[in-house]
Image (cartoon, rainbow, N blue to C red):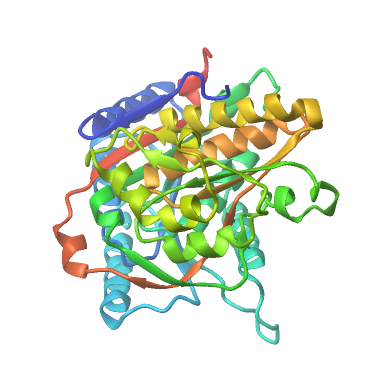
Length: 391
């Protein structure tokens, strides 16, 4: 596995990890060139993460050659007035916090070009990922904070960054990636995430760029298909839309969060999706997989191992297609992205392909007060860089 060894910290250990990273950078004599990517969204959790990161960086005394904050905004979403106001407040706070170390700029995903007809959400995502990558040059540290980014956005950006930073997974450099550190930050509050309602899914499925072959390739239409819906609360409309696009004969393996802070969360999700995944499709309970709610690398291992088992089993009939739909909380979704990335890496060696379809909601509803009262736990995943030199 690509991340057989990994660096993951949670809670107070995150700031200790930052201190060590900055001390090591200071000792190396190599000045920091930072690109910090986060969302221009209504979720206030990104503000707390950025403030803590900047405070630890300044306190370390690490030499900063350049630092840029890239705020990723979005068009086409229907938000309440309160959420629009909170979005503007968040942007102002993020810019003010980052001014201490560098500059900031905003890019908007989904904005149409003058004189151009409306483009599909898949094309808009590809353009957005390309715009993010154009801001990546000779940085020593790239930080992606997914706390206030929509799921399709951070999946697209994360997978694009991985493909750029470690394009040749077979090289001797491996995850060291010439010393470029890619860090993913998540301010996780699964209980809050479960209350944020995403509604009115688009009629057309959104495909994560680079991960569409399994559903869109005509040459693979008759190949066996295995669908892994990674389940989270309040996503029934999206699951129903996605289910309608999955062949009746497909194998379905629902993924539930376990262990979980709420020990009954998995049972509640089974009840919520019973009609569409079990009563209608006759999915056997033995097909259910479990992913650790608070440990993305464990979720990555669990899902990737399941993918490999199906690939090996179906290799006797020529291979299979794998479709993954991440609808769970942020940490599991990040782990899901890593599993899909590695599965695509191996697709050149094995006859299999992976797709990540999503029924993108057009309307979000959330309580601003609940977000302000939330006490999320910050998690950090180091995916590449000096931490992997020996491995």
